Length: 453
Image (cartoon, rainbow, N blue to C red; front, side, top):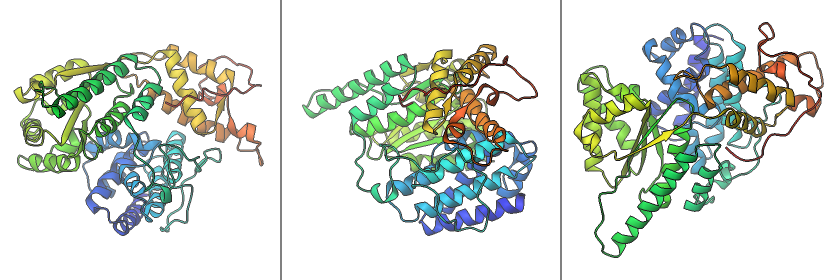
């Protein structure tokens, strides 16, 4: 595939979005992030991406970061279509799957990019109940056979025709989802305390008692891949269940989504993001990147004003590394007065990362052999643990690469058994040309923990 194929896929996505009543600019923004996160590890992909979307190649990395949640879950616009039981959701999901295939064609071919494209395409199709005829002329991406595009009904994945009648999760259900996450014990405790504080504060107001200055805004600090975005989404739902937010939607962005190319444009761009957030929660990742220049200052000033003018319909969570986030909060008196609580996200332990890997496997109908788990533990023990370590992101990338290697290992098996399609082995975790682990027996398969993550 080529830039031309990608351009055609984007045009088809716009058509599917227009038919569903979606804003074209929002579709384009989502498409750019979706493609970037799939192709980010392909050499020279940024150049083709820049041409296709008419965006600076320098913004390719930040776009990939914004789209990363969509590697294994539906995009924001697709989720909104499913939530309102739109009959156009299937067509939009199919167009996104085609877009994933086109993204694989950017830059130099890479097995790891193929794996990401396959998993991302399957995630879009899964939420609408499986594959459907594509409205585009583009080819479906090569989804590995073992990646099912069917998902059983659950609280978070419902067929489009049932979405309208599915009740919103209750406070107890959302807190239970929080508690089911792997690790993050300190984070869970703080969120529970905050929820109870806000619940009691609302009860005091109902009875005519004075209310202390309880800030709903939060600072999340920690290394990448420690669950900050996941918890932010749950907090949005928790605040809605408490009656503090009318919508509970979570809008995720970073500096590139707020800052314009010239003074004056930034205020408009930041305001547009804020408008989407009213009634819900705005999550700004790597917020410290706004500090240090007049463009970032303009975005911060616009944000502070909105937090004051719309104090009852907007919650903001900012996230990033600990020390830079201190500088961010101190950069503007309005920020310091509104962010009273900082929640620290610790790195995951090896045992927790193994549990996350097993959950990712079980969620996609894979079963890692004992040797595979042993190989993962060895990989984790040798991985440098600094700010560059991706925690759960490292594990997810390892899983996606393993899916591709497993498919390649079975290339000569014409009719693989269910057991062969499910099993991940030690040699699926590493490049066979650069073995990282000693040979281990691969004769048995184990079932991962069934606990959700």
